[in-house]
Length: 355
Image (cartoon, rainbow, N blue to C red; front, top):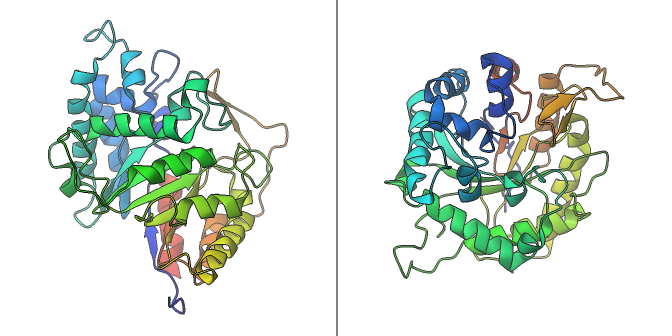
C-alpha cells in the first residue's frame, strides 16, 4: 500500500441537533425522543433550513437527520397526528423525507451520508457516552439483531442504494457493537426481500467511535488497538469499512487519539491484515468544555472551562494536517459534532482554502 502522498481532505457538516437548538430555537426534551429526526414529523421546513446552512458552505458530505431513528423512538413520539406514537409501518416516508431534504440542500457534487446512531442513542436516557446497555442489548448477537431490524426500516426507502454515498455508524461506545455492525455486512446475495440491499459492499460505510471523559478508551474500557482491530480486522466481515472515525469527543483529545489510530492501523497493515488504507473521519464536539447531561438533555458548563490558545477550527486543522502526514489514510474527512455550527465549519473550510 502506497502512502507517500498527502491524503485529500473532504468536509463534513456539523452538529445538527445543537444547531437546531442554538440557531432555530428548537427545544428537545423527553417528549422528543427522536431528537432532530422529530422535525421530520412536525417541522420539516426548519430542518431543511438548518441543513441548507451546511449545504451552502459547501460541504462534501452531508449527514441525514436520522441519527436517533429507531422503531422504539418513533413509538414513543406522540404528536397531534400520531397521538399514540408512530407505528413501524408509518416510519419509512419520514426516512425518505430525511434523504430527500439532504438531496435538495446539498451541492450537486456533495454526497449523502445516512446517519445511524448506536443502540445507546435510542435508550432513555441515552447511553452512547456510557455504553451501559440493558441486558437485552448487551451482546454481539443482540446488537446485531437490533441494528439489522433498524436497518430494515431504511430498506423500504425507494432507490436508497443509488441515493446515498455513504452509511455512517456514529458515536459507537462498545467493542461488541462495532463487531455487531461489522457482521451486518456480507457479500451474500439477499435471499429475501427483507434483506438489506445496502449492506453488501456496494455503498461505502464508516464506523465512528466516541471517547468521552479524559481517558483514551471507549466507555467499555476497550483500548485503541482493540478498537482498530474490531473496525478493520478481517475476522468480523470480509467487507471492510471505507473509513474509521472519532466523533462527539473533546477536540483537545484528538491529537493523541489520531496518533494512536494511525499507529494501530499500521500495526494491522504490518501484520498483513489490512489490504488498503482506510479513510479517517474526524468530527469532534465544538464545545468549550461544556458537558451534555443525558438526563436533562441540556448542556452545562464544565467546572474546568477551557481557554484554548487557538480557535476550534485552527485546532482541528492542525490535527488534520498531522493525520495527512501519517501517510496511512486514503483521505481525511473533517467536520464537527455537538455545538459545531455551519459558522465553525465555514471557518474550517476557509483555513484549507487559504493553505
